[in-house]
Length: 229
Image (cartoon, rainbow, N blue to C red; front, top):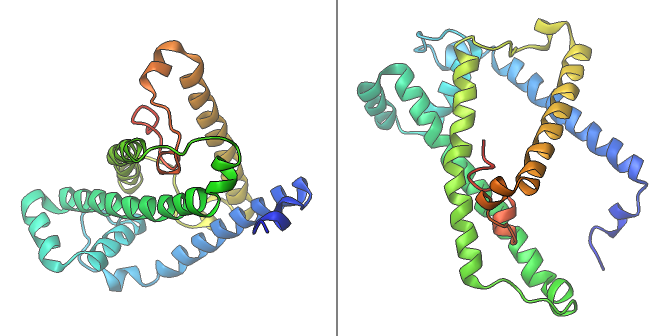
């Protein structure tokens, strides 16, 4: 019996509404949690002085929680406060992204090839990709992680140095209704932009040559290097 059969039988409109409500709930919960945590940041991390804002303090607190004090001190002595902050943040993002990738891709691999392999391949007369292909696409995905880990650090630098209009509290933009409206607009613009960017990679002959085919779960969780930005 298909584990997700019950979900597929639900009316599409209801499924989309439920997914949308879930995204909004996650956003609201995360924002509320960050606002509550901001009360404790000055006492958790009193040493932050160069960039006095809650985003910088929160990131710095996470880094101090994850990395030993000796590593933090070495980075601070070598690159200065901000240099150490963004270097450690990049390393943190890279490690976390890699762990998440191998965890999700590994579970997906087990589901596609081990649990559903006969249905998706044997019964369809298709061949499973070889180990060499899977290894090659894992390598491609891992290489793209260097780009993916760097982009959030750049965005965090823009936010923490006051070069954006990103806000910490919903009250800063007029309340939750404005905040949720901004979120909906953002998701719409991003999803449309990503769709057309990827579509262009397949319709433009020059760009299509630069993109490598992604045919396994190990690769589909990551785009190629040209896709990463």
